[in-house]
Image 1 (cartoon, rainbow, N blue to C red):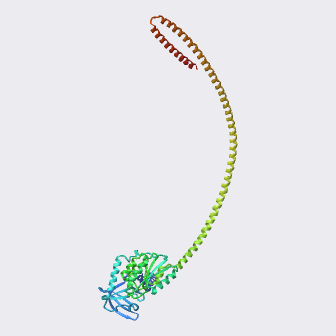
Image 2 (cartoon, rainbow, N blue to C red; image 1 turned 30 degrees about the vertical axis):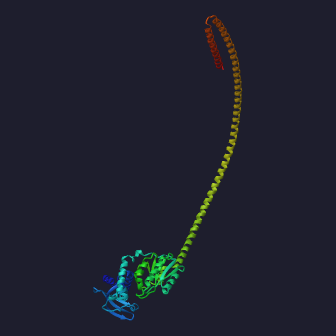
Image 3 (cartoon, rainbow, N blue to C red; image 1 turned 120 degrees about the vertical axis):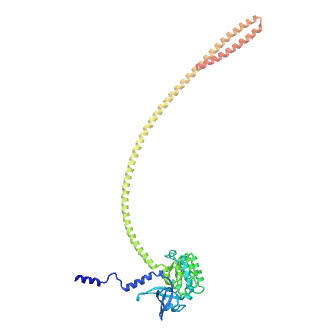
Length: 456
């Protein structure tokens, strides 16, 4: 029985994973809101079950080729500006957002604009242009430029007389008082709006001082915003090298200019917030960082000072020890210098004495040798002189003896010759003898000179 009771209790307790209807409907609404970019802006269908109320008109939009339907509502603020009235059994194109009514748990289209198909040529042109621009990649997320975090000069393309300029300036200066706002005046609705907007956007993009371009105007009917769907305006914004923000209406408005912009804002005020940093918050963060840096600095400085003091004490101790070591080395060097000086003085004196003695001895030996050489030279000169005298005496004696003997022989020979008959031959003989005598005299002189030289 207890087991049955427990089983019954388990069956009656709700599963903890089950959601309430309210939670489910809220989650569906949030999911649809997050996925809004996945839904088309324009839907075509056939109108049925039209119910008009003062605050709005309810109707169904049926698939043209099938039986599928979706509930629609056009609130009076939009319905009253439709060019065509909502008529049953009529094929139409609507510009709408996908909406989920949480109280009733139903999905519906919140219609912002409405055209009968027979009269929707402009809508078809818009869709063709959208398709062409999308095929060129002008809507791609990877071509979107990042906005400058701290712009110094913002160029605003808007009407000089509209409230959008004031709303933007007020929002921007509230957040960043020092930012410069340069207004590029343009017509933002009507027949001249497109060329005026193109000119203003290009002037802002060509200005090197502009960091960010904002194209904005207040909300309005679809017809008054149509200039922001025109191709020249869209391409001028897409061609900007300067980052762009487009805010051309309230939350329910949508244009091609917004699709090509780097950032989309709902209103001029929202654009002012998106374009500028919250300097009050920045200052608070800077102050917080400064405080943290100050605390960290004090902590680091205190630690560093303690470490430096310890290192200085260690260094001073080391320097003192090094100084003591240096003084000891200086003293040892002085002692060594004194010892070297004493040893050098003693050694120098001893060596000088030895050198002086050697010089004196050498000088004595040189003097003695000079004296001996002088005596020897004189003796040799005396011997040479005596020899010369002896040679001269011997020469004179010998020459005289030889001359006397020759003269005697010549005389004897002359006498003999004269006794002969041939006096002429005698004379010739005498002549020959004279020559011989002369040669003998020469030979004797040469012999005497050679002998004298041999003796020296």
